[in-house]
Image (cartoon, rainbow, N blue to C red; front, side, top):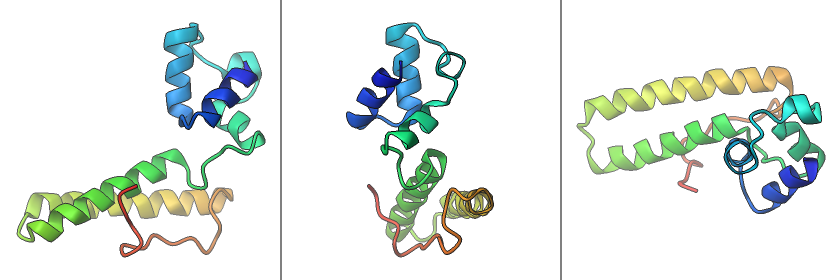
Length: 117
């Protein structure tokens, strides 16, 4: 089971994508009861874990897309509010991950460093 997870991780799949593949193609609804660890823990032990947690990375990507949109249409109040909400989520989640030791204490969300990856 761990070999399948590592193989899928080497192919570039995220931990949530690996969970979906295990569920749909292999008939394994949850990896943790079988392996004793979560998919992300297995990837971390294999050295394949991303530098930023997947949920935080998705929020940063969403914020980058909203920044691009707002550069084109500055008067878009609905998406300006959506950007504020997204950036608030980023700050809250980053505080949580700093407390847990997942992110380094000096990590900071920078609007200028955000790019669509």
